[in-house]
Image (cartoon, rainbow, N blue to C red; front, side, top):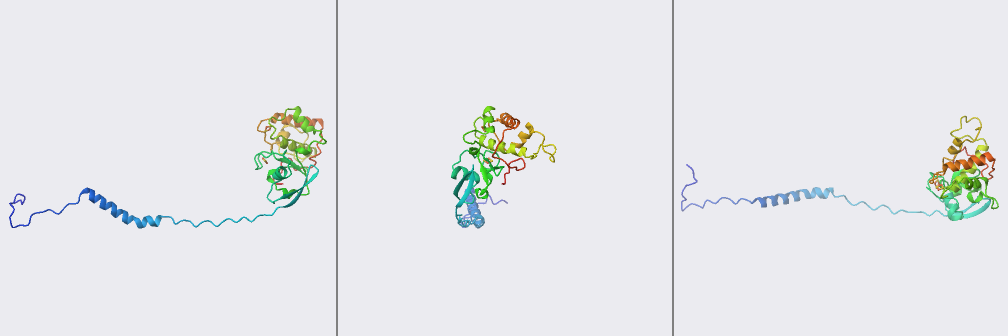
Length: 249
Ligand code: FES
Ligand code: FES
C-alpha cells in the first residue's frame, strides 16, 4: 500500500523532506572548490621574475693618432681602432667625396684605392691602412685637370644623380690599371694568359661590385671603353688586386 495518501497521525513528526540545494548554490560551490583546488597549481606555474641582467660594462677603447696618406697628403687623425676607413675619410678627414651607401660592402659607393687596390672602405678599419697611399675621388684630378675617366664620364653621360659616381670612378681607374697589368677576371677565357682585349663583358664583370641605382651602366661601360681605347692613363691605381674589389683588405 502506498504511503502517499496515508493520513497523518497527529503524534507523528511532520514528514519534512531534507532541503535540496538549489542549482545555483550548487554551481557556486563547485566553482569555489575548483578555484581553491587550482590555486596552488596556478601559483606553481607563475614564472618567477628573471634576475636582472648584469649591467653591461663598456670599457672605452682609447683613441690614438693614426696617420693616413690620402691623395698625397698626410692626415693625422685621432681615431678609435673600430673606426672604418670610410668614416675616417668622411667624418675625420673631411673628405666627403667618398660616399656611404650600404655601409656593408654591397654597393661599392665607398670604393677607394689603397696602394693600387680598389677596396670597399666601409669594410676595413682605418688603422689597417697606415703607411698606404690612399686615393679617393678628390685625388683623381690633377691640378684641377680632370682625369681621362672623369672627362669620359661627362662626355658619355655616365651618371645621373651621381651618388655612385665617386666609387665608379675609383673602381674604373683601378680596373684600367689592373687590365694593363695583365690581371684576369672571372670572364677571362684563359686565365693563364693575358686577356687579349678589354671587352664590354670584361668591363661589366670588373665593375660588377659597383651598383648604380640610376641604371647608368651602359654609359659607364662606354666611358670606360673609350678611355681604354684612347689609351687614357690613370696614375692613381698603379697596382693590382686580382680584378675585383678586395672587400677584406
Ligand atoms: S658603402 Fe656600400 S660597399 Fe661600402
Ligand atoms: S648615378 Fe645615381 S646611383 Fe649611379
